[in-house]
Amino acid sequence: MAELKSKLDRRALVRSGGAVALGAFLFRSSAFTSDPAARAAPSARAAAPGAQAGKVAARAAPDPAEFPVNRGLLERARQAMETHASSLRRRDRIALIDFSEASSERRMHLLDLEAGQATQLLVSHGSGSDPAHTGFVQSFSNAVGSNASSRGAYVTSNYYVGKHGRSQRLSGLDATNDNALQRAIVLHSAWYANPDMLRTHGMLGRSQGCFAVGEKELDDVFAFLGEGRMIYADRA
Image (cartoon, rainbow, N blue to C red; front, side, top):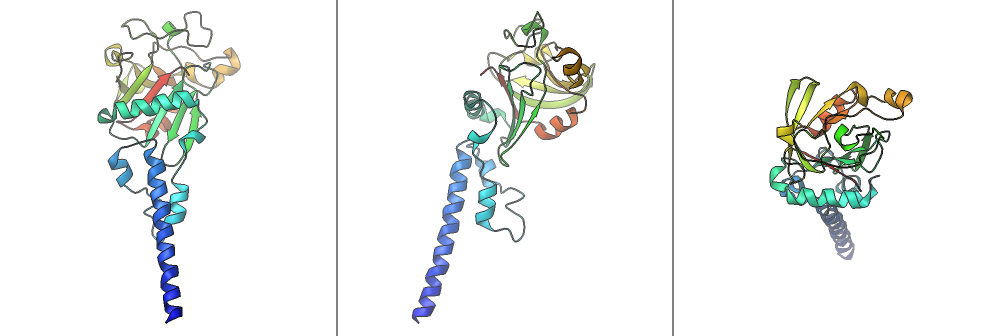
């Protein structure tokens, strides 16, 4: 009888440990997103047959502080995600653009908040934000006709084919970028945002305020963001 009780006690302890691990995972995830749907929906890895709860929790509970981005800028993006939660269809991934960096730097950060993975890409800024073409954003503007980059949170919208080929419309969510649709500020690819520009010019070319990425990278960006996710652009 004593041996049976000992086995039952050990089983109860294992169950308790699993519950603590799961609770820690949910707490850490909610530190970056409070979206009930995102927390309630298990990840593909968590749902894999035969997966052990403890190990899945350890893989799927990334610490946002470990992302290779400026801490202050990341915190502002997190706050923007909370502020604009009702405008975002999905909150598992974001694109964070650090306009403190030169256009020669991979300053577009694609952050997978669930997997804890980050990818860095080159991205252009507007000519109106850098009239002398120094490679750095000097100022922001939300004015129609400014050809400048705007700071703030955007939500990705529908795709279309325009003068820059395949493109994606963006809606500005803040007072600093709410003219984005009227200004046709979109996500597209461009030859002047290709990496070989750095070898020949030391910096990327400039857009008219749009987020232009390399021609070979557009598919990856579209696949990562989809529709209804946030892009946050600002200086640290």
